[in-house]
Image 1 (tube, each protein chain N blue to C red):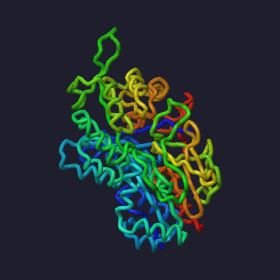
Image 2 (image 1 turned 180 degrees about the vertical axis):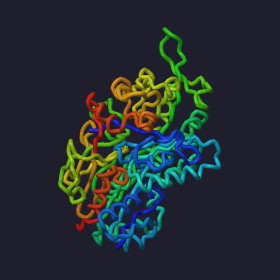
Image 3 (image 1 turned 90 degrees about the vertical axis):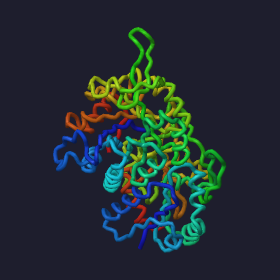
Length: 216
Length: 257
């Protein structure tokens, strides 16, 4: 019973690993958390996590540079239906394409583009950086028992680009930043969060624990 | 809605907090990790470590502090001091920092900001600006970048520099007024506002906080996205919660999780 956190040269893997280990411990679960760049670990894992920090194109190239990883992800997530969590750019990579600096293909599991955030208030700063609440568009098991909405818990965001999903039904939650910004995308066994659960204290640890309990 | 951030800053030298954090229940006031945990529990929105270690050889000690902090604190961590090369940033990020703050290295070579942003993304590149007022009384306000702890003038206009590093890919500016640092009479609000209004990226106001109204002013008058303070929190004069309550009373959205 393992959780595979994919190491492809992007992302704050140390923080992600520690947050997952903490969530496992607090939930009294028996799970090994493994940071790995081996496709066979992904195929053997029960849960798969794709972190990601930086630019879309850079992350895509990094993922492609790990031999057999995209194929293993496709097999494990698309064919075997393992629960999958993408974090930040790891969530953005789920889209059809990214438009940051250059047009680059994503995994295409959640149809849509990754393009700049365009707040309707030009005075708002970019990146969208800091703590924001979540507005649920569609209830999802990873949000179980997590207070959301205006008076809910906060998630830590830091991004200049966001996922514009073709199908509004794929958006499970948004954050308000001069209009709705995509916070969580979800489809079947796949979920992607734009914020950083590993840096979001209470909400983050609760969401990670929910993900590990999830049996889609 | 996005909340204004309150960021305590710890000066770290040779792996120890320099001024100490005077919290109740802290076994070792000089341990940065223990202080970080206390601030995490107290509801700080981010944490900033400033490494003031003199020698480059002691870098490993700081990285160990960052690593141990990231193991127990699930909140964003910015680390500055001695960041001179992309390898310094990489090492900090691998240890668990979320953002690296670049100061004099960016003054010496602006291209460093571009390289850092291209390599790691703008979201983790903070440019720290230490500015001092150079205009005389009656003249229109002007600030210059100073290095070496505020001793060495550079002749570089602070507002123009802020615009420049933003264009090069900085994701955030940590702005310290060298006139106000340690003064406890409040931020240089005119400076804060001049920079915050000049750039599209978030600005953290720093230098001079002596009471909670100063934090309010930093956001309301200075237009800062975040406020940073050290001594008012370390010495137990105010808690993070008190700071946020005061800000909320003044109509500033804050996180009370």
